[in-house]
Length: 130
Image (cartoon, rainbow, N blue to C red):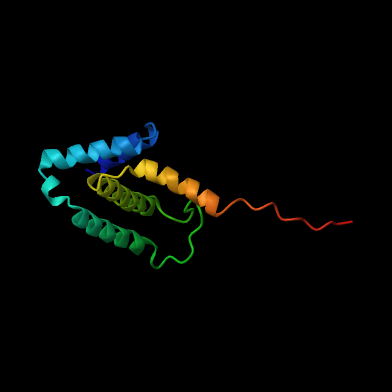
């Protein structure tokens, strides 16, 4: 199983970018064929999402500040982080879908709102050195 997981991870890294809509469709089908739709209420999905965020926070809990790119992390630590981040993303996408929301469009709208709320300031002036 470990070798299979590594092969899957390597395949996924080499594959094309995946859209939110593609993931949404895959998750809906995954739940449908297993008969899990009845359990996927907004409340249940939200609580599962919160639980996964808790698992994600445990990874960082005692690490202190972490450098970008995680240079001091082992491959296993990075793999664990990747899995927990994926769980959070997938529950978030499924929750939005069950609520009838277009998460991709909502994210784009939020970026526009944030750009308006936090405009780019003019570059700071540099002191003149003579």
